[in-house]
Length: 160
Image 1 (tube, rainbow, N blue to C red):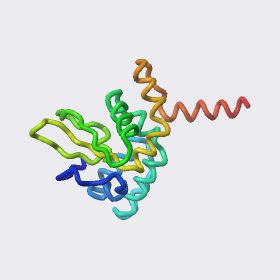
Image 2: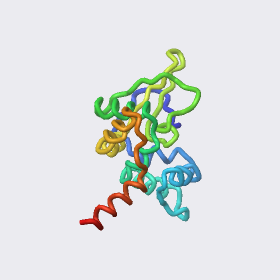
Image 3: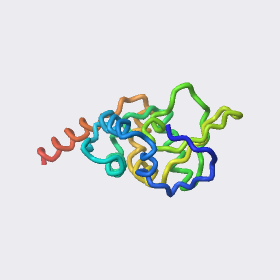
Image 4: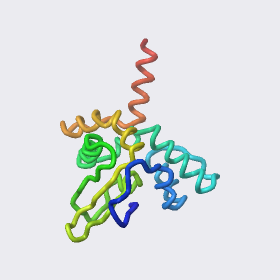
């Protein structure tokens, strides 16, 4: 989780610069978890840039792993627009959005809530595809993972 000391940040922050506060090993584990590839032979700065690019270019890999609650949070972020902090009750375990480093989090211990900011680039990337996964989660239907979607697309191409 990437925590901040106050809520004066704006959402125009670059994802790569956010990822730079994490270790290179954490970034590589994130790629493995989301089935993304970034060469392990790069320096930390280049790794952060490429991980950020992979995350932004492959939003389905992120969306498929989110729970219904987190998909609703993505919906809140998208509808709220830039520079809006979303409030969420603190939990014992982090949200995947926080684990993946996709949001900045201010911990308000007095109110017992997380105040989160999603960068514009992440919000824009997820905004295109999250409706499908949110609808599936709301209906209680297990959405296909990215590999299954790729196979279905390939089979459709072969049929045509």
